[in-house]
Image 1 (tube, one colour):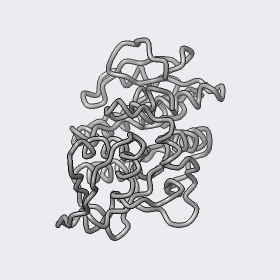
Image 2 (cartoon, rainbow, N blue to C red; image 1 turned 180 degrees about the horizontal axis):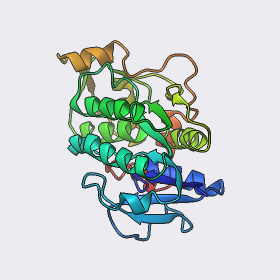
Image 3 (cartoon, rainbow, N blue to C red; image 1 turned 30 degrees about the vertical axis):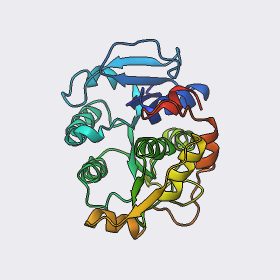
Amino acid sequence: MRDTILVTGGTGVLGARVVQRLAEGGRPVRVLSRRLRWADARVPEKAEWAVGDLAEGTGLDAALDGVGTVVHCASDPRRWKNDVTGARHLLAAARKAGSPHVLYVSIVGIDKVPFGYYRAKLEVERLVERSGLPWTVLRATQFHDLVLVIGQQVGRLPVVPVPSGVVLQPVDVGDVAVRVAELAVGEPAGRAPDLGGPAEWRLAEAVRAVLRAKGRRRPVVEVPVPGAAIRAVREGALLVPGDRMGRRGFEEFLAAAPLGDRAYGAAQRAGS
């Protein structure tokens, strides 16, 4: 019986929350990791563990054994070319393993913003769609965690510059994990409706909110930044109109976030 759900990137900011959600729902779930299992409070003990490397294509046949659904969360903005290579390896192994449902988590606006990492994500979407496998693609907006890190990094300056006119719609990782888990246990949906947070935030105002939460006073100055990518963002490429689905707002997230830790994902490790 092929009822196990394999989560790539299952120890990451989103992947760990997806694993938790699936395990809490009583679903057999397996984490794909490059490393042997280690103690991690975010990954339930009852979750299975598989060692494999997407970029190298190793360990994938064993990881996919008995799997009926693959939730593909693994991604690396620093080495984004590996995203495409890893997806090719994963999809080839999935076809050999009996054609499980592949659910890929992507980013809103990647077809509108000319940015290398986004181009790689878009290429992975196309690979999934053309794979011949049952598939679902869910695009989500930027996580609260990313906006927090941006605010913490630039907030160390005596005068805080941010690109003018940039509007984001940050979403809570927990809200995304709930939706991913729902899609994972359902039928393949193709392009699922995009998921965004409950409110739009001008980047300058989001940074000011981070500074307020940290008790810091800094002037935040919007500065014009040229380029096609920023222009696309100013024109709303990263926003989700209509029913945005995300429920937890950015200020609610900030109230529980560990503001002393500037590492991306610190809020998830702290359980906020």
